[in-house]
Image (tube, rainbow, N blue to C red; front, side, top):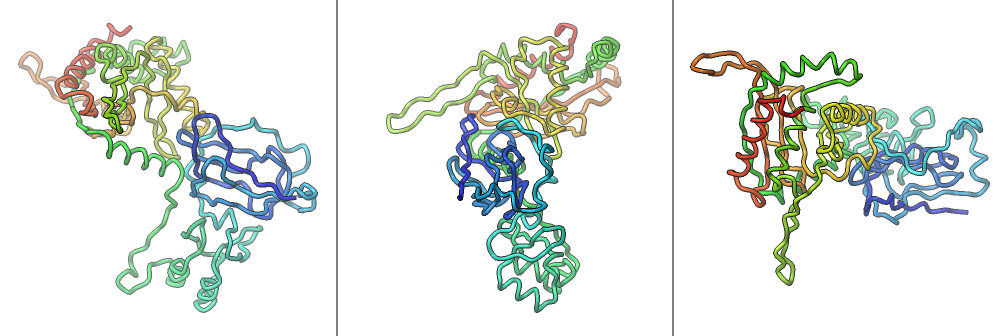
Length: 419
């Protein structure tokens, strides 16, 4: 008996998902609740377990392909529950049942070509250890003519299929064909997963938002001294205290006075010419852009206005660790009202962050470093930082953005008022 497993509605407004990684191959047997496939939703990567025990007959979507909710992902053969497929299943009792949907954020290393994990239509050739290569008959014929072993070729076609170009490049020692290109090696990396989702969101923001970036600098000498003073207390509490919690405290207090920055824009238009609305959020959920192996992930600190320095520090540590351990949950990536991108630990003096649409502003925090500045007519070394605010000019003007930055800087330069 055949069973078509369709992409389920995960319950977060999902309309489609991108297949990131299959944990099985066509022809494999699988038990119920064994990891089946990773799917990237709008917010996070989700590991979907197998709904049945059986044999994998056919994938309806390859890695990197998008699938609508309700469309078939994979077809099972439930005859005999796949029990006759030797070697495909671990001994009984070794598979732990997973939750119905375990949210994970997988590393980019998992985005391997489908030639290493699936066998799309077109035939296959052994790769050793049960792996298969996918190539059309014409490509196999070309490989035979050029004496190319398909087992050693990495496919870059749809679903990891080996193309004629892959075969010709392999025949040339991995270099592009043509004498003029003999010294120009290339590598193709699948543009899938979180990297592609980030690209889609950033492109949408650039097309939609009227971006303007305002930059200023702040003297954080007092903040650097205060953080040093509180290190012993942080150690006693078991909390890693960075500069970011101080910045979040100052940010939330400033957003309260400038509500247009903690907002979204609902555009009007349509047949009736509705005027649209600026929706000012009365809650403060601050997204913190975090660099991870799988790409840029933005976990959200919920109700940041209700937390003190230590609670914010603990939240920052917890969410950052979950992102970098690939264990962030979809619910922790939703509901943001304003975003901070902290470039400082990596370095840099200036950047133009892209607004995290549908939000209307994003704050970039650059590197804190000692710089010569003039104080009371004397040149002195101070701990300075550049702050950059990108905002939607449709919602607020430059004057309001500058006033907001002035307020933020005053608070950062007088950090004891934050405690």
